[in-house]
Length: 67
Image (tube, rainbow, N blue to C red; front, side):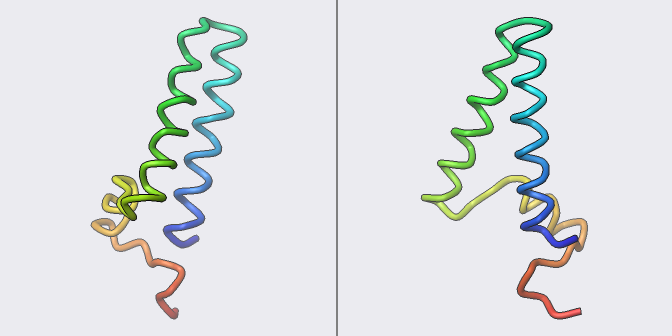
């Protein structure tokens, strides 16, 4: 897996988890989904993502890197 795939997967898991927890545990869990969505929106404008920086430091290849 490359960085882009991991970022999309983590975002999707967090959104789906927040929906499930918000429905079955406590409505305040919806804030997690709102935070993830706001982070995705912010990264589209600034081209900066914290998870991407973490994955770079762990030497996870980007989709541009050729194996």
